[in-house]
Amino acid sequence: MFWSGRNIHYHFTGEQGEEFRAKRSRSRVRGGRMGEKFIKCISIQQPWAWAIFHGKPVENRTWKTDYRGDLLIHASKVFDYEGFLWLLNHRSLVTCLVPGLNAPDYISGAIIGKVTMTDIVITHPSPFFFGPYGHVYADPIEFKTPIPFKGKLKFFDVPDELLKGVL
View: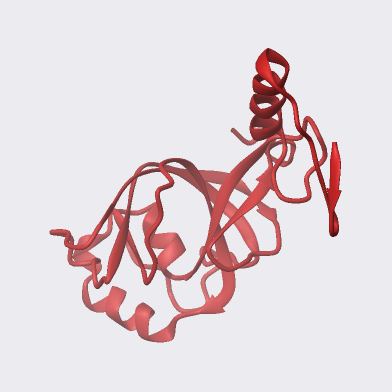
């Protein structure tokens, strides 16, 4: 172990080093406690977060990522009114009626479900795709009980113990 500025660096060699690095990468994520597990999450404005669970296969972003896998959907506290009008004008694209503007279906400030992120694209046949990048989602599961949680920009980590009894 050696010290450089504010960081402590561990130097292990051989099997001991491989085991330490593997354990650390699996169980520790930015500020987490050793042994704590996390699931990635993304915050999305309403009504787009609602639409992901009702037929929207792609989420528009300005940034790329290499991440693929399970992803929690957080409904942000911000509501996109122009997006709501777009959704009303394209209601045939969703699997059910678009809720009214003040409907309780537009939950905010909470994790509302889970998807699998399968790809990132620069073109997509869905009318929901505006670009420049599209995060492609599959297998949406909407939670019966939303989990209050503070959202963040880009991907953020949510302790998986928060999801006990939900998944």
